[in-house]
Length: 188
Image 1: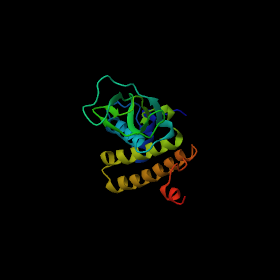
Image 2: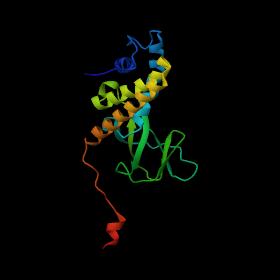
Image 3: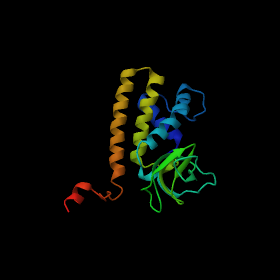
Image 4: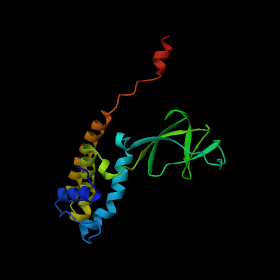
């Protein structure tokens, strides 16, 4: 079932014991809290892990303006970027880089970026949606109920849901092999 921001917020409100909402703009306290806390909470949760459904790769466009110091080239970052995972020349990792002034600075002429982006809510897998709803419930609790003990309990539940979501997500790809390990290399 494809979820929306409204559906995710309504599920979180139900977990807090509040009434679900019909719109993020309906003027109730629940809608106000949801509209203000949802975007930041969603982006923070997306940024905290390289989720397989929210990770992309692309070759960056080189900019004409060159960095003032340290690197030879500047590149345009993609729209919707939440977090850079790595950068490489021809591969998605392996080069030194720095993010400055909303651009990626690096020495190679071509750069491939691996990054976390913000997908549409309809693309959230069930394990991530469950973790997001749990985190939203924890965030919504204090402003709506003023109960610190309930908020603490919901934060613990949210951390458990996040661990389970990370585990499920990590099982969706072949584990990376160790490419170079100095202790084996010294053995000759």
